[in-house]
Amino acid sequence: MSDAPLERGSLFWGLPAPGPEESFESLLAAPGFRVERIVSHGHASPEGFWYDQGWAEWVVVLSGEALLEVEGEAEPLPLAPGDWVLLPARRRHRVAWTTPDGPTVWLAIHATPR
Image (cartoon, rainbow, N blue to C red; front, side):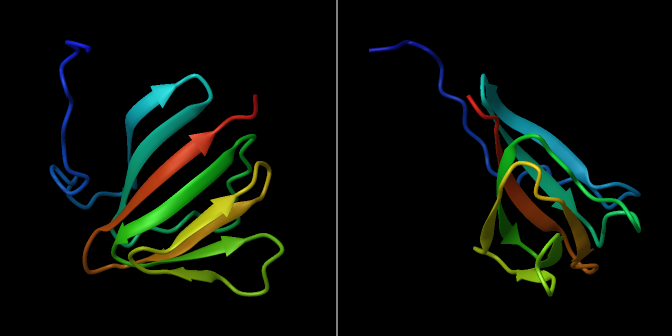
């Protein structure tokens, strides 16, 4: 049995106040993966900006709503609480819209290839 202390928290505690940028908080990291909480307050990716990551990203919306544009998809993907998407490495994507009247809380798991 391990005597290592437990770490606990809530994904909804200490949400950042609205500001000019989205909030990204790393919750857990180890070789090959990272878990982060993202909080958006009406944020969207800058016009013409696309994420183009060298790793896969699984993301779920926990509260709020969002529209995610994914290269190759005809329409933006609407995301509501509980909706998730797995974005393969190099699949360009951008946040088109998030709820302006409250926080959109995301949980993202980033996984690098072995």
